[in-house]
Length: 104
Ligand code: FES
Image 1: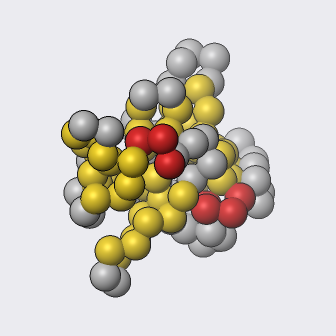
Image 2: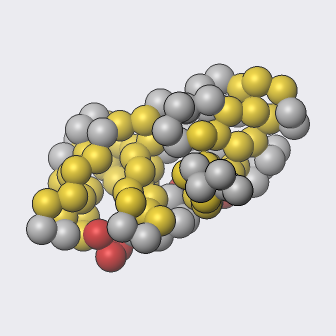
């Protein structure tokens, strides 16, 4: 599905909807990430309380502010309060002429 223009996205996830499917999309510079829109820990909406950032190793991470959960957006692995959390579901993203497309 077409999610929007590249410049519409930031480190704060934005929920995009196509029919009965939805995901969250966020961008760091020219890199765009799509993932499930509800936190894998306790299903809080990442469009309100999520944020993505690069960790010290330069890996893109998602932070959920509700309980401080952190997920690696490359591997999908996450932790909450230092303990393993359910992985986050991620979706392939393609940017074509500034349009962001997500394969749900
Ligand atoms: S709901 Fe996101 S870390 Fe708990």
